[in-house]
Image (cartoon, rainbow, N blue to C red):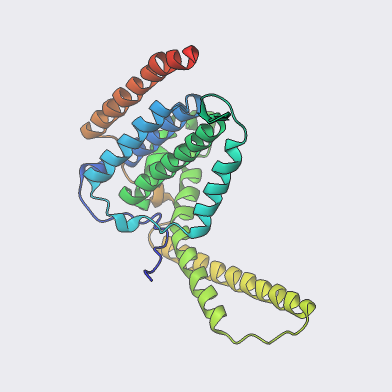
Length: 275
């Protein structure tokens, strides 16, 4: 049996591609713009256009298939049950099965929502796999520079975001080690159901206490490292601005998304009205 692949997030895939060299703020703005587009026009044409952009970016960045997590069997079961229950909603279009007419409107809506979720996860994954975490805080500070006139603590927000992104992978690894170590410990045999429930409750309390202790230790170590490097102000003070390649990326995304929106409003809208 093949080993399941874990989720790889907030760890960039090594490489020096065009996508890797893009400014972090460009990627954040592109994701925000695509998110707005899919929020107001979640049709098949915009979803397909964004999926095409993700595949193109993955090819240019040289993202291997190994970064994709293994899909557990229970998720396929949930998707099947979700599609089955959505089919009962009926709606246009309909197909005839003998003397019975079956509406596929609910199933198509379920498939569209599923595709939209996959596309949004792919967007987040592309940013994670091609962006160094250290580039996020300076980019956020640069993008939020106009908000400083309103006395909004943009630099502090950027530092908090950067520290959270740095700590997230470390804490995941620590929790996995804690959970594996806990499973290796012998468990007392409980005969009654009440004893089993009590054992599970005590195990959850022990894991929670150990997780809090590890988090505090990691926070203390990170604080010492930041102090030794000049304080939190250095995290967001690095120079960060778009380059010429970023404007070409903006133009490409604008053309693809604009074409998809035009097709969604004209061709797809006309066909839907005709039905």
